[in-house]
Amino acid sequence: MTWLLIAGFAISSSIDNFGVGLSYGVQRVRIPFTSNALIAAICFIFSLIGIISGAWLAEMLPGILPDLIAFAVLSVIGIRIMIIAFRQQRKHQANVFSEPEKMDFDGSSHISLGEALLLGIALSANALTNGVGAGLLALSPIAIALSAAVGSYITLSIGVGLGAKLAGVQIGKMSVGQFGTFMSGVIILLIAVTRLL
Image (cartoon, rainbow, N blue to C red; front, top):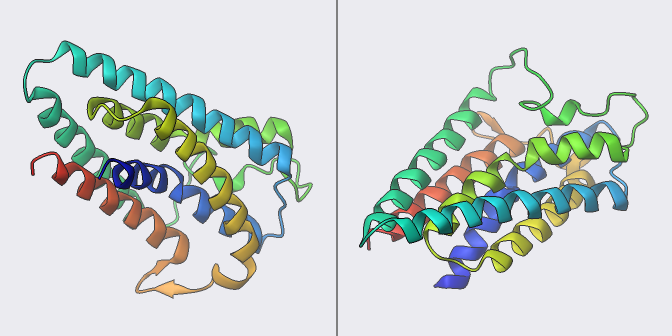
């Protein structure tokens, strides 16, 4: 069960990378190994910070309170992610942190290390909040952070590779990337429910 929870957190933390990768693939923007590795490293750091914070909270709280707070925090995160997926259906003016697929500032068709730094921060917001929830559940910090980082690297690479073929595909009213974001929220909600079982 523990490894299923870790896998769930890893998928949820990195599913946005897949959607962003699809967007880059369509635009023929490449993400070199070093840039993708930097993004994964940032994801690792953010996850670790979140987990340590969550574990500290768990130690401070008595009895079943950590489980109840974990349920509440993860539920809010899951619902928020699902709402974001629905909002993505309507294009609106936003900065690079809410639309990370626009991070190729210089139009060079590849993501430089500087752009990767900003992109990594933008994509690691989920990893940070998910990490707090994982810390409250007393899951292994290294296992969560490593799985999130590896998941980040893999999903971004796969997204870029499949972008040209899948970005135009619709699942209901959602694009593949939006559906992935929505499912990320569903996964987090399912993890939240396990706290009450």
